[in-house]
Image 1: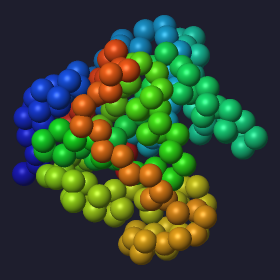
Image 2: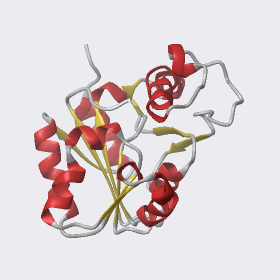
Image 3: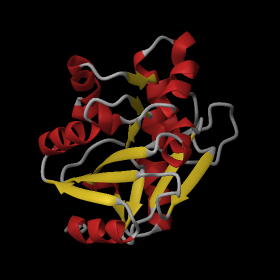
Amino acid sequence: MGMDMYAVAKRLNDRGFQTDVCKTREEAKALILDYIGNRSVGIGGSATVRELGLYDALIERGNTVYWHWKVDKPQVEQTRINAIGADVYMCSSNAITEDGLLVNIDGTGNRVAGMIYGPKTVILAVGRNKLVKDYDEAIARIKRDACGPNARRQGFKTPCSIDNVCRDCRPPARMCNVTVVTEYPSRRHQAFRIILIDEDMGL
């Protein structure tokens, strides 16, 4: 039996995150597009955002969107910088604990930077598969289910890219360089929205 998403949403709300629960990805996509409106959007690396089809929907209706996954290699770094300067930052969280902590691991750090001190509005889309009991389970989930697939996607030759098993490696392509736990929105945030989706989504 899965975790009670509404109970997790209540704990997130108690922490100051504005949280919604959506039954389907279509419902979540419509809600997110409504929240964004006509503002510019920066997107951090996120399989969930890709699966929602948000980039194409935003571009089609005329939003300015910065996503380093959608540019050629020479433009990646500047696009990451532009994303952190947008009106809205959109990504996912690697894990959310039962008591409402956001746990994220980055290799480069741009995604967590955008969540912490980027746009004053942050929107996270999070599938039910990312809800975990506690911090230890969050770290285990990220290293088991996210780091290896992300390394393979980027062509990094880390040990986890082979078998999804973390060996605390040291190569330049290491995926687990920055670990961040977000307990509450920062004083900078005007709105920190979390959309919990009752489907398995993302890594």
